Length: 259
Image 1 (cartoon, rainbow, N blue to C red):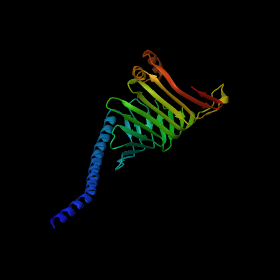
Image 2: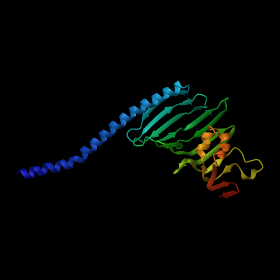
Image 3: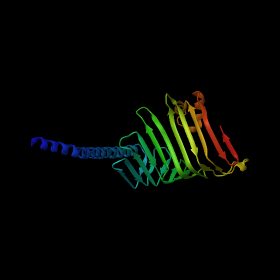
């Protein structure tokens, strides 16, 4: 009679073991998520305090960190950020999303009106829909990729209006040649303020277009120029850099150009 009883006990153990293991894994994950959330909350508060101590203006009406259990999601309402001596940015809402298993990839959303005020009071405005996002991934040595995707967006820049649909921009260093920057740019439609003078026949709407290329010695040139776009071209020449186009497609009115 002992052997059947032992057999029944063993069968019940294997019946319940997967559920016990699942409960242990869920408990461990929950503990990890909340411990990591506390560390992130502390790190965010310390960063804000450090920025303010360095002379930055950094304000918001509310902020919260959530996203349990699949992500960390920081939501900041009515954000204002202006580092010392830099332009001032104001938004309606900023959302930063990060997966709990990948702390080196952040996706940012800033739907609604984004206002950038430059020195002298010049204002630039970009309005984004809810699907528009920017992403940044990096490793211990360098940035791996920067991406920008906009479903629908409008902008008022230097008094001129622009609108775009299906816009995307991806930037990444070339593997094995980290001084070079790879670029992929495309859009479904881009509406500019007005047709170019002398070429009014082109119209003010550019159709599906694409540019895939590479800037050799981009990063040394950017450092040499001090991050100043106006000096970048000269610095690129000094670094023996070049711009290479792998593919270029432009659909602008009657112009259908392919390179």
